[in-house]
Image 1 (cartoon, rainbow, N blue to C red):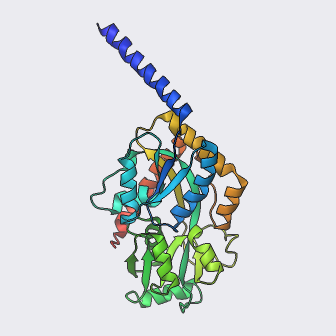
Image 2: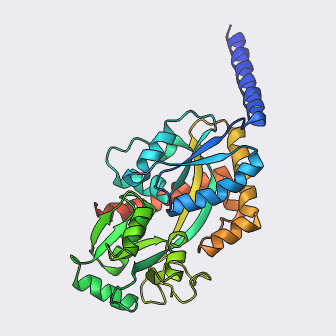
Image 3: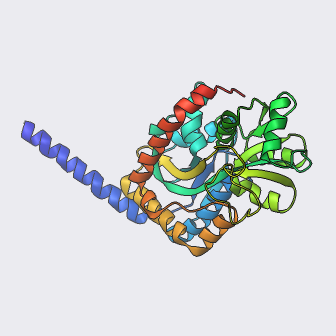
Length: 324
């Protein structure tokens, strides 16, 4: 009897594997929804659209972007975590949704383990920016003003747990600042208010600010990279400007936990192909971003990276305890 049960289990497992492989060969047979857990216009949205456009051609079906903003990205992320693991609902996640939100958001309805990592999509440094008429001429004067006027300085971010919030947390900690923080539903609305002069400053990914800085809509004081950005050659690194502030913000694609491995791999292969495309690389570079290294793109490698980032940032975020 035990031998018969063992054979039955093996047969079921083999059938499931064969069925999963066959399903992956047909996949996708219809459009795939990619949930961006922030409003349109933010860095997660911009990067997701660039990558999804190329992946759609490879997969032969449209990857449709759906913006589900709010609560620092946790509403959209939670929706994907609860979706059917069939490869037709994906998440354009980030270090905000997968590293900060689990630490900073009370009663969050998902965990990092509720997702199957597909692969990273981009890296980009943070840029310290301010409204175009802000009086400080360089980062030293900016920090001096912020220390002398903490209540008057309004610092925007894309919601508690968003990547821009993490960038602000690290910058404030590094510089010893305690500005008045203003939380938005996403970086798009925050940027609109910065351009309009309704807030004073923002710590945001380069992919969101390069065009605004180049066009003169806002001013930039420093980037968190080790070297200056080709897209912002006149903006010094934070180290050049006199502060130890280094940060690389990443984004990636995730599927719900339980998505068949053959489908995960098919998506990863399509993403890898997109990140090798010259036009994708050029578009990201123009925005101050960069594609992840080849070895970082495998689902297993990305999963290890996300777990390491969560472990590294947890004590920083808990110590900051910045609230809204």
